[in-house]
Amino acid sequence: MAANAVSHMRFVFASDAFKGTLSSPQTAAYLQGAARDYFPDCECVGIPMADGGEGTATALVAACGGKMRGVDVHDPLGRPVHATYGLLQGGRAVIEMAAASGDQLLQPDEKNPMMASSYGTGELISDALAKGCSDITIALGGSAAIDGGMGCMRALGARFLDENGVELMGTGRDLAKVRSIDLSVFRLYVGDARFRVMCDVTNTLLGESGAVSQSVQTAGLDPQDATKLEEGLANYADVLDQVFGRASGASVRDVSGSGAAGGLGAACIAFFSAQLQSGIASVLDLVGFDRILDGAALCVTGEGSFDAQSSAGKVVPGVAAACKAAGVPCVALVGSIGDGASAANVPGLTAVMPTIEEPMSLDDALLVSDKLYVRAAERLFALVALGAGIGA
Image 1 (cartoon, helix red, strand yellow):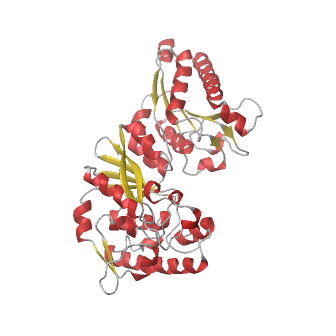
Image 2 (spheres, rainbow, N blue to C red):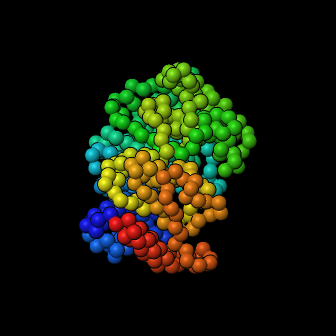
Image 3 (cartoon, helix red, strand yellow):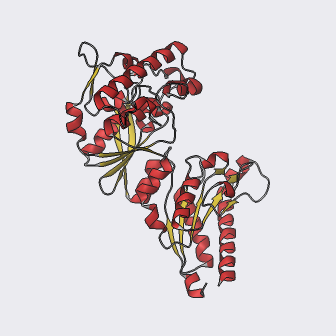
C-alpha cells in the first residue's frame, strides 16, 4: 500500500454504548484520537449505534440529526407521565414504546396486565404524526401491558367494540370482549404514514412462546389471569383476521414477532402493515450504514460485554454483517470477552480486542473504563499501522 493511500485512510466507528460507562459518541472520539496519532490525515466517521433497546432514539438522533421531543402522555395505568421520543430529519420519528408503556414505569405491586394499556405509546405516535412525520419507527420491548396493542391503536382513533357495540377501554381484560373494530377515524388519522417496527423476539401471539407465557416466566403472572389473557388474545386474533384478512393465508397469531410487547407486535402487523425487523438492522437502515461504509479501510465496532448473546440481534454482529457485505474489515473493541466467545463465530468480524489489561473486578474496571478504552484504542491502531506498513 502506498504511503499516500495509508495517510488518507477512512475509518468508521460504530460502537454500542458501554452500559453505565462510555457512550457511543465517547468511544468514537477516543478511537478518532488514537487513529490520528498513527494516521494524521485519516478521515474518521463516528456513528452512534444501538440495538433497539433503551437509548435507541437518542442514538439515532445523534446519528441522523434531529432532537428528542418530550410529551405528556399516560403510563400503563392511565396516569400522567412525561415521555420522550426522537424526531429525526426528513419527517422521521423513532419511538421506544417502553418510554410510555414500559414495565419500569410501575412499582412491583402495581403490575397487573389485566388493567394495563399501551395507550401512551399511541399518544407518542399521535404526536409524531401531528408534527408531520410520515416515517415512524417503533422499538418494541419491556411492555407492562398485554393488551394486543389495543390501547396504542385507540390513541390513534381505532374503536374496539363489544357485542353490543359499546366501545372498550382496551386493557388486557377487554381482549375477550372485542367483537368488531371501527377504523374510520384511524384511517384518516394515520393516512399514508410508513411504520417500521424494531423487534428482536420471534415469539408468536399465543402458546408456549406467546405473549402471556413470556410474561408468566418473567413476571410471575397469576395463573388465572394468564388463562383469561390467553383466551382473550385468541379471540382478539380472530377479530384481527376478520377485519384485516389473513396475510398469505396465515393468521396474525402465527406471524413471528406477533407476541412481542404484550401483543403490540400483532397490532403493528395488522393495523400498520408493518414488517418486524431486528433492532440493529433497523438502525443500520435508518442511518444509511451501507453508504457510510463506502470507501472505508476499517470499521471499529464494540459493546461492553462480548459473549454468546452477542450473536443474537446485537450491535457487533449486525455491524460486522454489514461490513462483510461491503467488503470492509471489521474489528470489535469490547469491555470484556465471555467464555466461548470468539470473532470466528461472528460472520464479518475480523478480530475482537478487550479493553481489560489484567485481572480485575468489574467494579474496578468500571472506575477506569475511560483510561482502559483509550489505551486499547491506541493498541488497536498501532497494530493497524503495523499492518499497513507491512502491506505497503
